[in-house]
Image 1: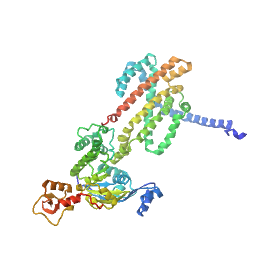
Image 2: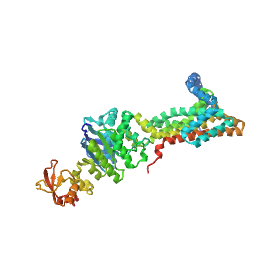
Image 3: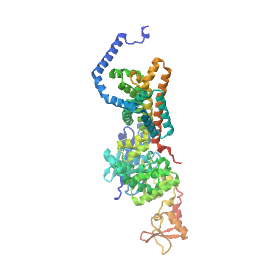
Image 4: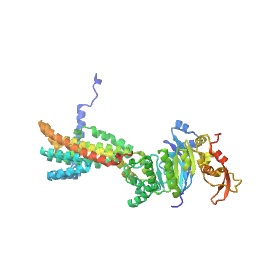
Length: 343
Length: 294
């Protein structure tokens, strides 16, 4: 598979109501969501969204319910039509595609996983998994061979002939994932895919997804309301509130430099040891003659484990070539891992 | 106190209106009656063929075919045995031929109702405008006393099988249309969204998702359709449809208590056979919903 293409969302507006188009200017002039609703009876869904989703990476869109995150992901395969703006995949604007082009785009370039699984209840696991290929017209035998691989990959081998409601929630979502992967599309859209699962299963599924991404390098757009999930999965995170992006960046950016009080409140409870990298905390002005080494790019929590294991107070941070690039000490590590009192 | 009287049209005016409408309809039937008649000829041929097949085949073969069909549909020994017993009972009391006529009639009516009703139901489910247009017509078809629409039907076709067929289909088709429409509209929107997200065309969505998931409701529609056809064959006997209905009609006219009861019970027996077989079949199609996790 060629290098995955990213997705550019530019100046995207969605206003629900009969005269959405007319309302865009009012929103650009700064009318609030409440005012728009009260005076004009239109609902502001998305307000000037600009996100550059990198190819081959996981882009998380985070927000609470009503923030517009599910609306946003449905613009990428145009299950919802935008009021204004562009969604670019390579040189193609998804918003300008004809019905036929859009269908081809959905068939070959995207696959989606849903919060409520949305499996076809009258079809077995195998028949669900081949659904995407079936409507593309791939011969049944080939489709089933390809699907069987993904069913096994998500750990459902032996369940091919079961019906969805014979399976637990976690297993059903594995079917959803297998169905999406069988499509072999560039873009994987995951709409709160793990939100309906209980915490242990959710962790488990996150691991499955991260493992898969390691080999597949798809462009994944992952919607969630759970910051821990966002930080664990996201190469980049965009935070949405009232239909607008209020901050975007890496997980570390968001935890260390929350854009406002709203996000600061959010990140307060986060396990910072699992977000912040040693590189952020290390002292680059010096290196040690000897002592333990820690690789660059790992998380503080893992560094803390090295300190605990070795009993040393300081360690060299080494880059890929094994060359020391800085020093990390226990005090700074612990200090960075606890939540700053000022927030 | 003239105003207390309702200002109805005078007798002469009413008579003129009725005469004009009746006259023009009669003219219409005289001009086009033959064409319409010919149009329905294939249907009549098929009905006659089925009737003759059922009546002229040796009864043990028909009995075996019924038993096999019921077993295939229901996969239940009890229903199959019940079917055989009921048919033997019917035959012993000399109602075999009439019953076969009725079965042929109901079969053709139900097939016709499915073939016509399902597409209408599908179109209705897709468009609120069509639904708004068709629903009042269905209301009319269901509430209009059947004797009333027998009048124009008889004027066009005279007395016989085809007018009976049309009358029965008019009566039996509304549940088929309504339940197809309802079944499709009740399909989970999440699943439809998933079908869209994978790039299904409208046709693929209909065949792969909407119809299979609406099937239990559609089967209920077919079941209702059969039941209503059976109840209508008695009324249809008034315009010359032969079979069990005619026996009932004769019994009413002559106050033959036993004959009436026997014919009535035969209709009930057939209704139960059809009902159990189709319901069990519909349930079996839904086997995926019966086994539940945990």
